[in-house]
Length: 178
Image (cartoon, rainbow, N blue to C red; front, side):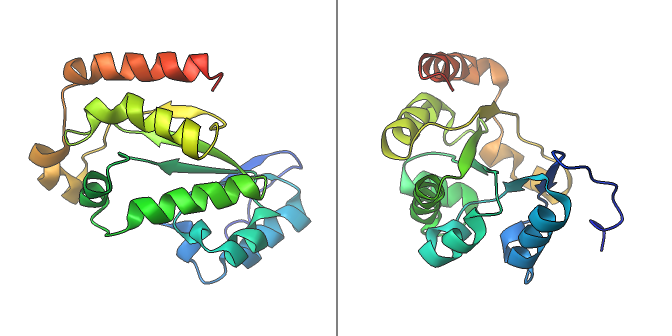
């Protein structure tokens, strides 16, 4: 309904995000409607775990132009600690591979966090080697608003400490033409 109220033009970009859009019971119908009715570019902000299922990825891939996702670390224990979801890294990587196999671009969002900021360069290298080249790299800070602020001591890192790792990550991205 909210989409129908927008004045969308062919070629506009619509980003589905907020929470996890792939859990919406009408996710595929929304994607189909956006593409068939509005002819827009569809970007999905997702944890990419939904796309670990081959058949769901195949069904959705025809309607998605790009998926933006976070990879916090390639160490399963660290990644799962940050996401608070056991097996999330494995599902995410499988989802990203599926998207790539079905021709959907992915953008990699990296957030320097206390448990993993030193791994930013190796995480990007791992993604490049084992998943593929991201459409773009997004490095952003952690938003500690609301209840997330209660985790500040476990997750926050001073940007000065993370700067050398961010700079190395950016050099790797530039060398890979990301």
